[in-house]
Image 1 (tube, rainbow, N blue to C red):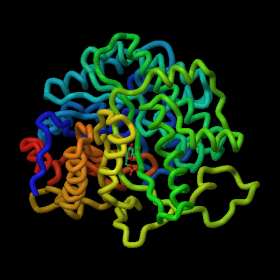
Image 2: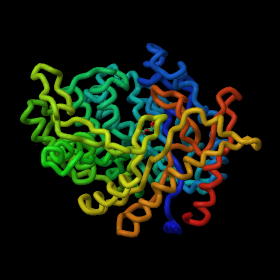
Image 3: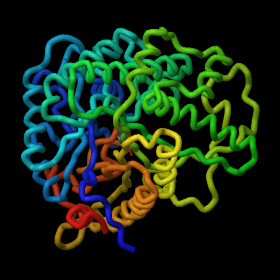
Image 4: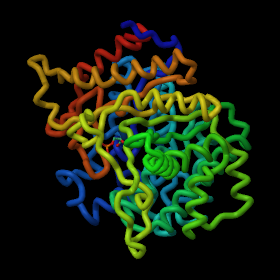
Length: 461
Ligand code: BGP
């Protein structure tokens, strides 16, 4: 088939400050929770590689942006590091950091690549975590001020802003399932963190509009479409509850200004409502997004709970459902994630039908693969045909949604260049460009990068 996309479709990739910048303690940057956690527990991290040992975008951004140009990008998403820009969390701007981000933005624009800037990618400054992180209302206000400073500094050139990337992940990782710092397991604290993160997003949007900025502002959510095992009402209900916890908890307030009733009812009935004020709910109601980024990797498959949970067991969302492995499912074995391409279509159709067809784009999708060096050919190019197939298989469904009226404006791969990833470090590689850690971070464009360039030139494949 022939898949044509609009001429102005956003093609590119996404990354984040902690995963690509390196320079973790350079030029005035203070620690964020990842820098700190690595120092405390290096063994948690694959091969003991820490956030300081990334591809080093802080030093090599000119070279890297030139490579972006070579693989045809017209847009690129990165994040600003709060602990670099405002090392004490509040107060003085670090001028060296401001100059760095200014240079990155200029370099992108000089190469006709539109900067999409995200303000928070899992990287709470340690000084703010010590005040309670997202549990603390004071930190919410500090974040709003940080966001306002970013808009003032860079808003004349940056016209696409995002308040958060995957805000549910720090809730799950840091407060429920033990894969982010501060690695506690406490549902009450998790709810407060989630609520405050949403509030921080709405306050940042409010600040953006109060400044009279003329770009668009949104949020990036990892939407994991929830599929019941069967049409049995108990399975369907379990799947709806999982959807309320993991998708609608941020999707509904971000787009519609209100939390889903299903979720609020559970929290109220079970005695887990967060501390909130009516004034803050008003801020959430009145400051919804212009634009939504959708990260899609995998679906969530759910069945009705099969065993009753002991009443004394710690309260967890999973009290209401069990997960379910669909027989015959396709897997990315390196990451342990199911690959289900149609999920991307189901999300876009859901946004069209139930969320006012909000302008959106695919802000992450991608395939992490371990041991890609073995696919390097005699010319030195990694033959990652599996990645090309993965992208095509998803783009076909994006194309179908587009044809059926979904308001989808672009596709960004995760990620541009192999990068450092949370506790997996450099195990799985996702990039259009490989990074050889043994050879001083040498970059080479993979076959998928060459292919992508042609897709952009032809507006499709
Ligand atoms: C998303 C994050 C990214 C990135 C990606 C791949 O959840 O927004 O930061 O890491 O997933 O996941 P991983 O690196 O864990 O394999």
